[in-house]
Length: 225
Ligand SMILES: *[C@@H]1O[C@H](CO)[C@@H](O)[C@H](O)[C@H]1NC(C)=O
Ligand SMILES: *[C@@H]1O[C@H](CO)[C@@H](O)[C@H](O)[C@H]1NC(C)=O
Image (cartoon, rainbow, N blue to C red; front, side, top):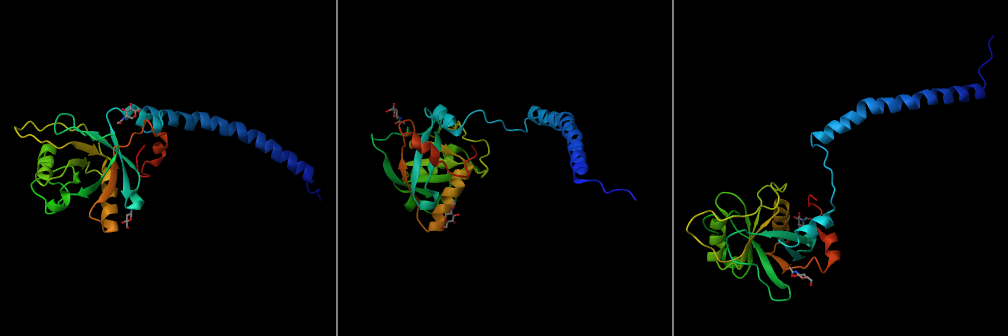
């Protein structure tokens, strides 16, 4: 009858197995995993974030406009808007930020008319992209006395990002300032307003992100960067 192997023998065998196992894993990593990662990177599937969100906000500060939603509370974040390139008025403010209502147009595309024109008066209109030109939308809400308009992308996953809005080439002209917003921001603001049963969101605009770095931390959680 043979002796059962002692604990010491078993332990030394395990050490031996381990020694073989580790280099094998390293080799398989080199052969399979590493080339796969390289391939992913070269195909552009791997998103490499070289810059932080703060960097982006600083780069963008010159041509973007920032505002804060004060109420409803659950969408109280800092949002950004890209002013239209070649139509509408300029966003101009007295030295301090103003508090104003941001009211969603109904229907959201505001292409031909809106049924909540009264609510848009002296407010900033929130309009959705699509169905007609940017200028057409601005014209509709301007006719109802809106003081400015934010046009949100109709892709709620942010689509093309912050689009540079240009004139549609018609003879028409518009006078209130217009800005473009991310689709996810527009979507959540609208849902927040509806959920709270309010006529519009109360916002404070503009925000100076250059002089108030703490604001960087207050971007919405659904923001893609
Ligand atoms: C905010 O609350 C409303 C309900 O009051 C809800 O419909 C909405 O989804 C909420 N939004 C966020 C971003 O939490
Ligand atoms: C923000 O503040 C800085 C420094 O005071 C100033 O130079 C800049 O023009 C301000 N930006 C806005 C958008 O008001």
